[in-house]
Amino acid sequence: MKTWEELEEKCLACHGCRLCERRNNVVIGVGNRNTDIMFVGEGPGEQEDLKGEPFVGPAGNLLDKMLAAIELDRKKVYIANVVKCRPPGNRNPAEDEQRACINYLRRQYLLIRPKIVVCLGKIAASALIEPNFPITRGHGVWYEKKGCFFIATYHPSALLRDESKKYPAWEDFKKIKQKLDEVRRTDEK
Ligand code: URA
Image (cartoon, rainbow, N blue to C red; front, top):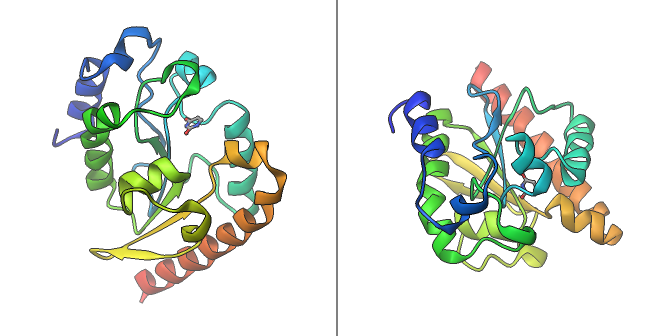
């Protein structure tokens, strides 16, 4: 999977786990492949499965608003998920499903080489930052790995379920904006 074309071809033909059986679309990712910031969710929901694009349902509407609040939009960043096919009933993707799919996300990361990765929720943070990531304690904290900055924040669906998480999530987004300005300034030097 050295190119985007190869990656897409492999994803579209993937039968690596049971999630392929009921999918309408493989939801690979959307946005700018030359971006310096990538957002990673959990897995497609109903709308995403129907449209073939990540975060186009209610959680996506909220994500779009949060991106706009820090002067970003889905065309300027890259958005992907840990698993590319919809887990039935929007359950969490199982460990073996995540394992079967994670190389696609790794390859997306390697093709993009972003400076910042934002993990949306515990599943993405556990896959990309550390296993069993404690989202309540660990959100809003930067982790640097090989020159890339990783941060976790609450998943937009969690914000829709629990309004009290909106303020801490907004604080995280302000940190993300700050870091992005910082890495862009450093790049200009
Ligand atoms: N939730 C996710 O984690 N990803 C999507 O694409 C949509 C909802």
